[in-house]
Image (tube, rainbow, N blue to C red; front, top):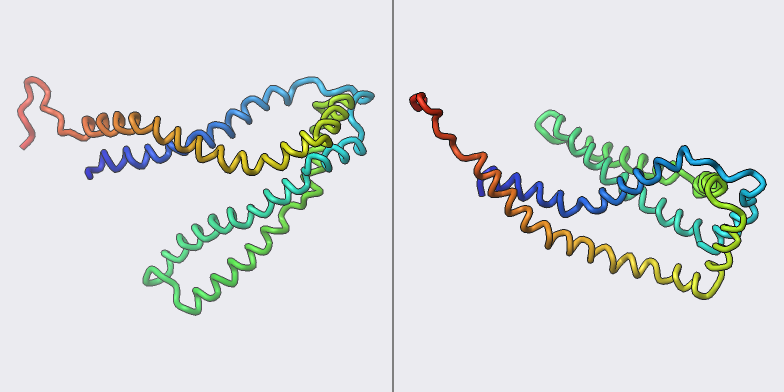
Amino acid sequence: MNQACKFAVVLGMGLALMPCAAFAQATADQAAPSAVAPTIPLDQQPTKEQLATLFEVMRIRQQMEGVLKMMPAMAQQQIQAQAKEMAAKFPGGSPTPEQQKAIQEVLSRYMEKTTLLIHPDELIDDLSGLYQRHLTRSDVDAFIAFYASPAGQHLLDAQPAIMQEYMPLIMKRTQERSKTLNEELAREMEEIAKPQPPAAGKSPAK
């Protein structure tokens, strides 16, 4: 496989993963205008007690705790990647057994610290402020009524299974539809990589 094809394959893999990143960016772009939107008047904002009830029926704390549990694994990947880069700088290209042991101790210590970076209570406080800014008391009462109902609880029960089945569908469809694009990209890269004929009136370089 020539360099152009290799480049196309790598870029194609990135294209296959773009929907997740695109979704995150689109969400951020859509959220930006709301930063300047007028806030809900104070006399219409939901109370802390209302929001506490809403978050309880929506299982917000459990969801946040689930997200926070994933943070150490994400941090571990980053830390290990950094450790690998640092290890390559050791004399001889690799650390000694003693240095490897010391590195693992440092990594373990930092991994433990990542579990203490953020507490669910902080996230809930931040979320409460945002809900008060964008939702009215009547909105929150309606949400409480729905999520406290059997239908609302059933939706919450089903969400993990739905997302588990939904994400592979997105990835499969993206990979299938990006295949043609990757092939086109590979052909164009091969054309660029071809030796160019000399310009008219110029002799080929010796």
